[in-house]
Image (tube, rainbow, N blue to C red; front, side, top):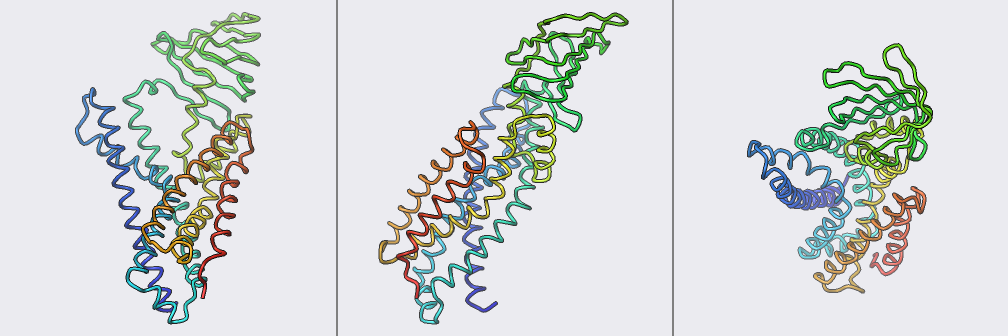
Length: 357
């Protein structure tokens, strides 16, 4: 590795760390304000919101990494131009394309580190955050998990404790379900077995219910059964994919598939993680070609403003396709990669005017 390469990588990393630190502080403060508002009527230690904000901030910063790369690149090239270092590179025979290739490879490896180390650490902290905060929300009485044995639900309704196990989902229905109902002293009241339960709302319709009370058995064609759960609540409990590490996401996907549960949310998260290193590279190239294209954009401040303005458009385009994917109006792969293809086309058009020596 020659001196120029070392200098470029070192300066680029320094720029990324500076922008990362700024983003981290800003997001931490904003998150802290939210936590202080949440706990203002609660008797908790004054340091608790500070701690919660600290462990929740990394996963929020993770979502902003594409824009961290964009802004870092702008500052990186702005400093190079300001100190006339770009002219030194040109006089030394270092072409713009060579600078691009060095920093593109660097961005890719940084992206891999972010996905494999930073994301997994952030997701674990997010999981810790959700666990600690759940003690101060109504959700603490709800529990729903997906395992190799299907869906398990623990609920408390009218002082009755409900333990529910279903082998699979079919839209708004639970399939092959077994319900155990206990009183507040955890004494068994009854067991209910059914092949199909409609959970469209919180008053479930249990079809062909087999009811077991002590040694007696009764079959009811249609039984109304009230709980705190409906299909929407179950979906919401499993919608926070950012609290799952890569390995946990892959394992959870297997369980979702076995349970016939919708794979949309988990596939969106997995494909997003897979695509992030590419996204980082495209955002780097997008920012770099604007900063280096002196024929089209001569004013440095104008370059930064244009880059930031276009990044906002990119954000909303990306968010639009994400919503389309979540609502299943387009497939998951398309919702993740169409914005990247659009960004690639934009980069290709911009690179046609770049001053490569």
